[in-house]
Image (cartoon, rainbow, N blue to C red):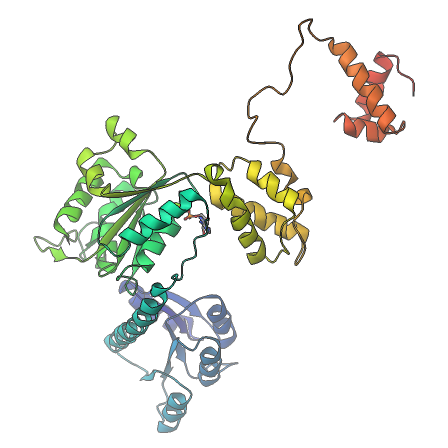
Length: 446
Ligand SMILES: Nc1ncnc2c1ncn2[C@@H]1O[C@H](COP(=O)(O)OP(=O)(O)OP(=O)(O)O)[C@@H](O)[C@H]1O
Ligand SMILES: [Mg+2]
């Protein structure tokens, strides 16, 4: 699959090309002019930019130069109705991959895309091979004992073809681990395809996973490759696997056993696939099996090599490292030590994702280059981990006199604020109005 940007001032033309490419499982964006195209190139990684030559504003040749400057690995192909040797020569000189003369057959375009794709794949494979010898491109942080163990398991299993089941609460980094397993495997140069089992309706799961032939069912107006075929040579990541219906589990079990898929409406034709499967869940699958909510045979197929990601609250030692990383990636100038302490005491029900969000928000509040202080994370203080639900007071033998307790607190607040009622009210977490009324009640004059 290639990521392609089609640039044409004629929206209809761009739309036609887009449809054709999407039908062949490429991911396509379109732009109506050179300026918009450049903006998209700045924000995305395209494998190919396919641009019209003559456009109002920036023409194709200028765009070509600018794209090559911003993203040298992106291939650029020019389309032109005015085939002149001159343009072709200048285009190639400026680093165009090729050019197409309008009108062209879609097949011509598809073959070219295919060729660019396989060449880029080879290039990528080589660089990735080199990178994976080092740390790899996916950065997972962690220095706690628990995470070190996880890294060790990842290192051991990555280059095997074994199925890995990654378990952990939401936001603990399951997808990140899956990506790093793929990146460190010999499949790194091939696709990593994510299937979110919870997001695909039951009725569509088979066609999503295994594809369909044209006319396989109502609405199947064109042939579609399934995710398993798209991932051929690479890795399929089955996310939220606990959400699969029983029927889908049976189908997948077969795929895992036989390593073949059948497209819907494809008759008896089976397609051999070379795919490594990784799965993730934030539920306890074993428990679901014993309750009858998940097939046991499928579970054992998946559970060949389990990796458990501990919740963040059980590895508070990782928090300074993670928070520091998120702070700098959000442009903040570090985190104050007492703020780090608050972060380490919080329970983090949303785990690393929640930490990431909290730091992003704090970095915005603090401003670029500024230190994140307790002020910017004060909403976390209200929910310290240790005394969740536990009482913070003890009642003495003789009981407590609430009336007197309130009176003493009001007197103390007034003394501390030197009679400033607003300040006293703030200390007591009550409105000024209520403070006056309670003062009257207790006959306090100040
Ligand atoms: N150890 C880590 N180092 C750096 N970033 C991390 C780490 N763990 C998680 N993250 C970041 O936290 C976010 C959530 O991670 P990820 O999507 O992998 O979690 P998940 O377990 O798949 O969550 P969910 O169950 O909700 O799908 C991502 O932005 C990821 O980059
Ligand atoms: Mg996830």
